[in-house]
Image (tube, rainbow, N blue to C red):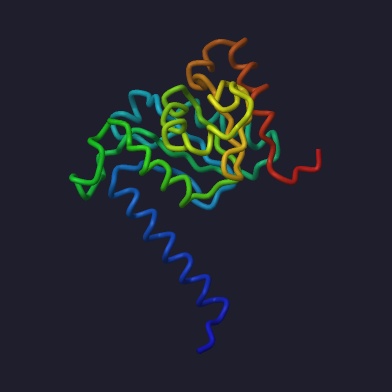
Length: 195
């Protein structure tokens, strides 16, 4: 039996849709392009996001989109995920309660499903969840500060670059902190960027 390229693509797309639906059913909140090469992970949600508003729809999302575009990512290269569960969980037994942290296993599954080339952890809550979910991969990193996901240091974790920040949204209110975040983000250009 011959399987055409179109049939193969449709099967992959259907499998991805099923995986994403499963994650959403367990409380994972996502926004943007699931096939993006970069995923932004947020743990400290603002009031609108906590009330059920779209993830990264505020000033932080606008600033992140502008920063990513400035360093070479295409406008459609934007995927955000929250480490706090949404209220759309269909299976209450398998999901974290709304507003609570999703489990490290669910976060790990989400990252592997999205399979980005780069991950930006926007705050210390997101960093803590990443540290728990990828502890086995982090312990093999020789530099202690990189292995602990210290802010501004790019860690290579299972073939993807991970950049931890320590409060991107809060930094937008302080010009000096905003500049520091910008300097960190510039360390994560798209893979294969010519410069």
